[in-house]
Figure 1 (cartoon, rainbow, N blue to C red):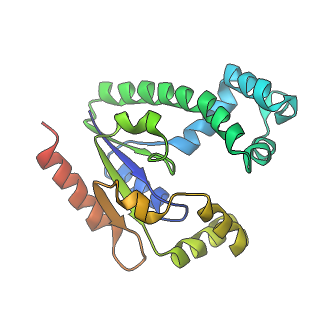
Figure 2: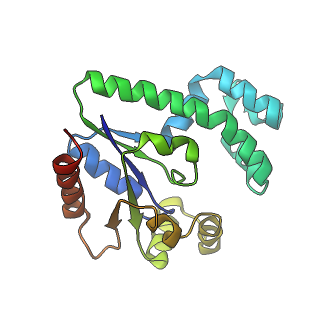
Length: 200
C-alpha cells in the first residue's frame, strides 16, 4: 500500500489538504486526532503518562490535556519522554488502521502530522512526503482566526517548529497553500504522478 506523509508548519493548510484527499477517496490518518482518541480510550497509556507527569494530569479517569501541555511546554527533556511513550503507541494504532484500509481494497493512504519530519520513528511508513507551505503572515492570520488566539502566541508556536526551508529540503512534493494558487489541482497532479510512477 502506498502511503503519503503530509506535513507542514502550523497554519500551512494541512487539514484542508487532507480533507481534499479524503474527498477524493484516499483515507487519511490524522496523527493529532488519533492521539487524542487514544488518550480517551487507552487507559494503560494514560497511567504511564501519570507515572511520568503526576496524577494531576488525570481527573476522574480523563486526561487533562491542558495540564499535561503546561507541564511539557517548556521542558524539552520531559516532552521527549512523553513522546517516547505516546509515539510507539500511535505507530501501533496506525499499523492497525492501515491494515484495515488495505482489507477494504485501498491502495493509497495519507498520514498527516505536523511533526512527521521531526520524528524519525515514523519516517519508514511514508513512501513520499508532501510538505505544505504558505507565507508566515498568511499562516498567522489563519491560526488567529481558527484558534481565537493572539498573534504573539502564534509566533511563539511557530518559533518552536522547524523552518519551512528545513521541511522543504526533505519534501518529495510541495503544495503551495498561499491562498493564491488552488490546492486541488496540485493534489490531483501529485496523485496522478504517484499512481503513474510508484504504484504497481
